[in-house]
Length: 167
Image (cartoon, rainbow, N blue to C red; front, side):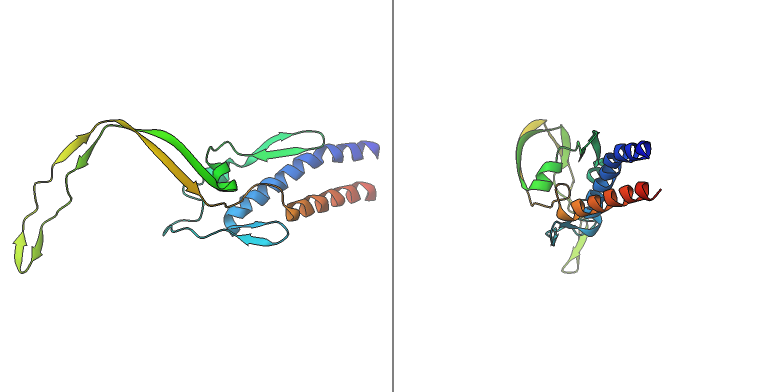
């Protein structure tokens, strides 16, 4: 019986980490944060797609980072995860590569019954340069401590211990 108890105690942190990862990924589906009560995410002005999901990289990157004997850490390595989760502003400098820009986008059309020809659409070269940026993010929590998550883990631990004691 002692061997079974030790085996279960060793597997509990891994199962708790799995529950925490699934809880965090579920936030992207339900678009809310659940602690003692449900806090919905603020809507975005996006017309297509889902809030915080463009490519799915952020959601897919949530994983077990480290599992010890009595603890489990989950996290992500995506650089923009923390500003989304905590809210805030990112400042930096980005490099813009050399590219061509069209002078205008006028097309042939009809105005007052007369046909207007398309203008000569030319392009000019924009040299590479650095551009400063400052982006502000609304807080949309998807990872962290939560009372509901704690309750799920406690329920799992109690069930695992009851299974071992019952056998």
